[in-house]
Image 1 (tube, rainbow, N blue to C red):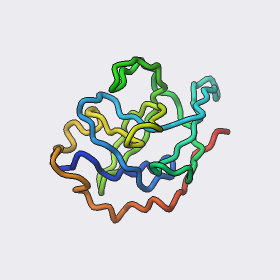
Image 2 (tube, one colour):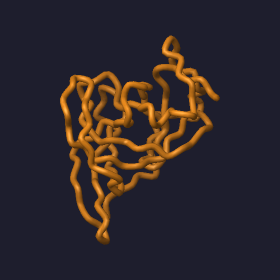
Image 3 (cartoon, helix red, strand yellow):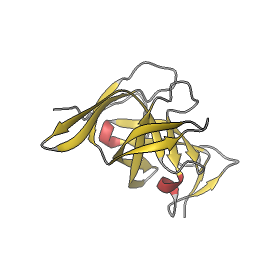
Length: 154
């Protein structure tokens, strides 16, 4: 099983994100990503959500307009103990040469240190986490300056 650090670079190709700094948080069940301008809509009877992602911490660009089917809507308790109702979507995550589907809750993480949390459901049975180390996975796949394959609402 590959060993990862407490923070790693993750790619989300479904949204054209080649690299986003993620905190590996085994205390969080569901993964989360910083999203804003979150708007639900229906397409062919299926609930969807449109949202904007800004993968670079402390930067307004790139700003990526995205849309995805809603997998669930859940009450999720944040690290400060407050419950928040969040849309949950599915996306393919890439960490090094490993790709797998994860659930992501959409929330405002603007004031937090990481734009993404990779929760325990996403890492379970795939990785061992070394909390003393960071960025153990080769980042050569990642280039934060490129953004492609954007999903846009129809």
